Image (cartoon, rainbow, N blue to C red; front, side, top):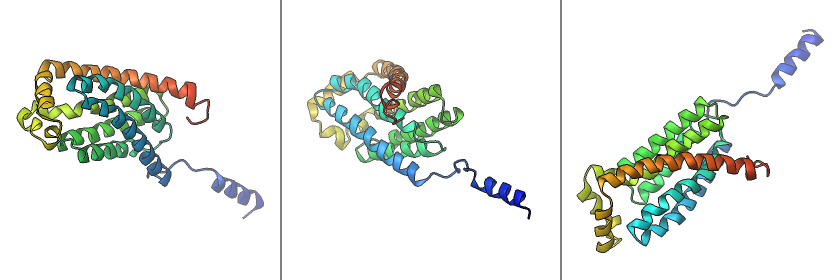
Length: 213
């Protein structure tokens, strides 16, 4: 082998390879860290809903907007298909353990896959793909209400609702009508999109300057 050929071979082997198809240890760490941040932020806000069903509904938009910031920052750290899906599974499992129905949790996991595919379509670099990905994932905030359309009586008979007290359950039953829930679904989609915009702007204004995004 000539010196020139050997040098060319060495240079070629030294070129950095693109990321592989499998999730790396760093990807898994990012999923864990940002899932915890997302859950803690939203759980803290959700606790305000103990006051009354009306307050519960009122803090939902705040949860969506606040949740957008860690989610959008998370998207700047992942470049492989599967990371966002795994993020959705982690969130779904947490809420399943916290009392969400299996159906509601399954929908959250499915929305994670949808968000992942949207990000992939934007090659994990597109600002608008990230915003639409969060809009889709943000619909997970509607999942606690899905069982109301299937078996309303069984929904309010769960141990989670029983622990809230009879007065709270009665007030929620009167409040959560089908027209209100339909309007809530639309509002959640709107706030999800707005949250994506706010999260993206926050990344540019603060995290990008600090070198974190």
